[in-house]
Structures are given as structure tokens and as C-alpha cells.
Image 1 (cartoon, one colour):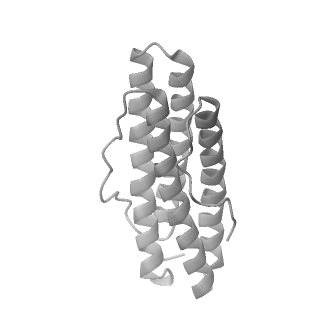
Image 2 (cartoon, helix red, strand yellow):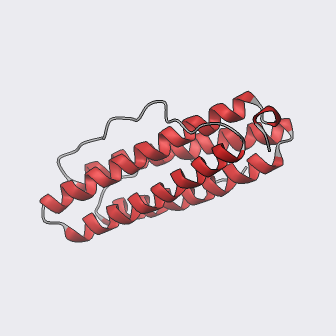
Image 3 (cartoon, rainbow, N blue to C red):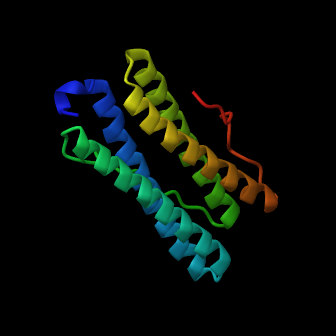
Length: 157
């Protein structure tokens, strides 16, 4: 596949996708260190696991961008969300996961609209992974007595 074969808006989705995934990596990595300083080693390990999963997504996106002929570049990383406790951190994380879910859903819909099945499938796979992450974070938050910030349904597109 060459750059000319990919709709410019799909390239935009790929670039934004990389920015969001690297923002998630940065956030989870920072939170792993923070909760580790608080002495919560179980939470630190869970955040480290999330960091690795989001880094794997970023690697897939970089590979996809290279395959379609564009140089990977994250345009802007979000600032890491802070909170005074684990429940607050998880609430921020559910917001980030919701943003990823919404972004992937939009990308899938657009790709289907223009008949780009290959990229629709690519974004759908990432969407499914993020829906799973979001559900896990939501369950963790609820297990701590926090209310979910999730507002998107776990739908496929």
C-alpha cells in the first residue's frame, strides 16, 4: 500500500491514534511510578501492564504508518492526569480510554464509509482492545468503590 492509496483523513486518524496511544503510555508509566511511591505495588504492577499494552498498540500504529508510506509522528501528547488517590487516577484513565474508544469508533466508521476495509479492520482491532481495557479499568474502579467515568457503550462498529 502506498501513501497515495490512503485517504488523507485516514492518515490523520493514524497520526492522532499514535498521539493518543503514546499519551496513554506516558500516563500509565507515570502512574505506575506514583502509586509505587505510595507503596501500592499491586496497582503499580497493573499500571505497568497497561503501559506495555499501550506501547504494543503504538508499535502496531507505527508499523501501519510505515506500511502506508508515512513517517510516524505523534503531534501532541496529553499532559499526565494527576489525582491524590488511586480512585482519582482510575477516573482519569477511564476518560482517556473513552477518548481512545471514541476515536477508534470514528475511524472505523469513516473507513467503512469510504470503503477502506483494511484500515477499518485495523482500527476495529484497536477499538476492541481499548473497549476491553476500558471495561477492566471500570471494574477496577468499581471494586474500589468509585463511580465510573465511562459514558460510552461497548459497541462494535
